Amino acid sequence: MKYSAAQSLTIPTSFPKTLLIPVISRPSPPLLEVIDSGAVRSYGWKLAAVETLFILLLFFLIAGSPPPGVGESHYLPKAKHYWDPAWCRGDLFLESADAHLTFYWCFGWVTKFCSLTATAWIGRGVTWLLLAWSWQRLSVALVPKPLFSILSGGLLLIFTRWFHLAGEWIIGGIEAKSFSYVFFFLSLECLVRRRWTPAWLLMGTAAAFHVLIGGWGCLLLGGVWLIELFLKPKAETPSLWRMAPAVIGGFILSLPGLLPAVLLNRGVESDVAREAATAYVFERLGHHLVFHRFDHFFMARHLVLLITWAVLAWQQRHDVRLRALHIFTLGAVLMGLCGAIIDQSLLYQRELAAKLLRYYWFRLSDTMLAASVAIALAQEISRRQQSRPAVFGVLVFLAIVAVGADVALTVQQRNEVRVPAAFLQPKPTQTPATKDEQAVAEMLLPELFERWQDVCLWIKYETPSDARFLTPRRQQTFKWYAQRPEVVNWKDVPQDAAGLAKWKAAMDEVYPRATFEDDLAAHIEPRLLAIAHKYNVKYIVLDRTRAKRGLNFPRVYPAVHAQNPAYEVYAVPPLPKVGP
Image (cartoon, one colour):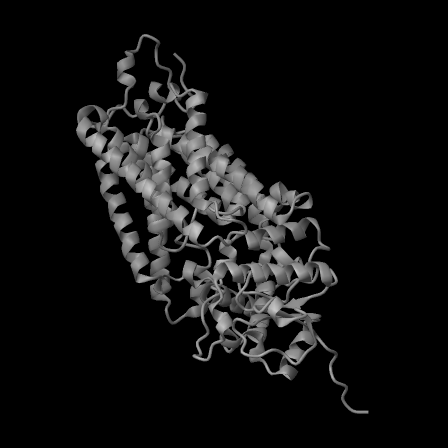
């Protein structure tokens, strides 16, 4: 009989095999609780492949909206510019510091050979498949029943979509954290199997792709190890000395993600760094980072998920297969609690609060509560298969109905609004605050999206490749479609302090509050002209669904207003001469 490397003690071949079966109703001998059961071994590659493909199908149905997704319009142009610096040269965001080098190295090169849209679909296919595979492995390690990984995957999608607190997601468009979560789940699988060495190495790799996800994960791994050290004899939980090579290896693997993050603020004055952090946390990303700004309904539903997890974790406290997962989740919950305490205790100390809150304290609580409840529910359902088959059947039916309803609702919503999420996120059709609206403001969303593509396509083929643009306040896909640099937009916030300071200054100057109602036409012409020349702008794109008037500059597109009633392009004239 063979045993995994994680089981350091040798068991004689004559040892009764029945004693190796984990017992949930009572504590089992500590060593024998390590997951290496025959039920898991019985999984052949064909069954694993079928489950992985079904999970992949669920991911596609939930997240398969047309590119670009809300993060893809941000990540993929940056990756393309990294490999081709001449592309959109002069764009403030694209030329800011690169915070996700591992993502650019491993996947950004695809943009050299494919369009951004094709790159997005390739990236989605790769990451969704890897995420489906890693989730299937984690689920089977904890619930070794055929097809239950598909059920837990569907539940994961429900809980991440409907019960998050801070807007965290796992399955979506292609970006750095898509790859990071693959290694994150693989690390968790090794953790629950008590394979500490690969757990550390995989979590370090997750940090290489996304330093916060993997970094927080490494911290929680250390917490689980400390607790396990007290719960189990030291002979079965590796000592720090034995585990040191794996920890060091994980740290080395994390360096491609850690070093760029550490060097982001190098050489920046402390005042600039403080102002940049404040803008990042309170002006740009408060919906992810600042607890007192979270929607109260989001808090209530997340509390329901938290209570559900606590009940399930208590019921499963004797199951070592789930103990490590629940301890890890407890650490994530405590991390979120720390974020809430920091927020509430520093309400009137914004600079210090910004310095601390910028590390996404709520990210892993969103993720781990959803993942743990999904797997714990699947386990509670599966263990009733023999003891209470009628209850088992009802629970399976209800779970399938819930997953099916979530998928059906998502597909229906996508069919009703067939436009990319990145186009929707800035709410381009939201009516102005003033009552005096143009009829064009009532343009249907698909037509508005088509008009946006029209103007971007004209810009792509009819303007110089190095021409810089001032673009509408409510958009974030200009570079994706027009492939031209722009001064600034709300979505594309740099990660480094120097870039953040420039971004904030440009946002305040280009888009004062009046532009929410009247777009760039809120500026008087002399002021807009001065701004354009300050930022070396050659053209201005005006959103006529919001602007109540055109600009007194040469209009170069459309030739006839009816050709595109939603968007206009103006050439920036020279500054008027002053004096003789």
